[in-house]
Length: 119
Image 1 (cartoon, rainbow, N blue to C red):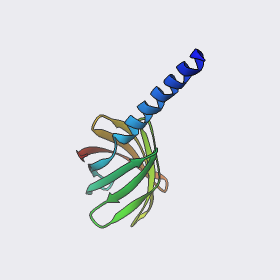
Image 2 (image 1 turned 30 degrees about the horizontal axis):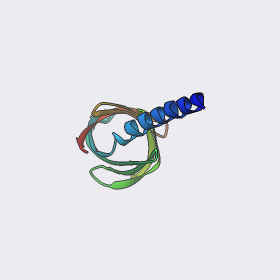
Image 3 (image 1 turned 120 degrees about the horizontal axis):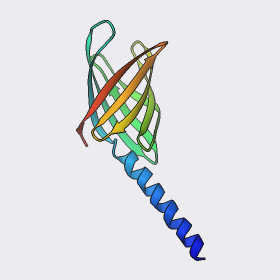
């Protein structure tokens, strides 16, 4: 009985730590970056996390599109978005108030950093 209770407490602690990390990404984030052709861009991300699922939007200068296939586990975040130039795949790692993303479209990728602008 005592061993069973200990296992439940450990499981609950691990689960709560994962939920807390996942909840930390909710809010607005902004990434300012330069594309390979030298164009300055700004993307704004609005994230909402619920039960490990990530929803929200990605906004650029010409569009705002919903996040699809959003996942978050610990400090890892991933999703896709149908942007004007095709399907973009975002894979990122959360560190404090920054998310470092590798963004892929077709066979090309770029690294960008999004910074939290609101919770």
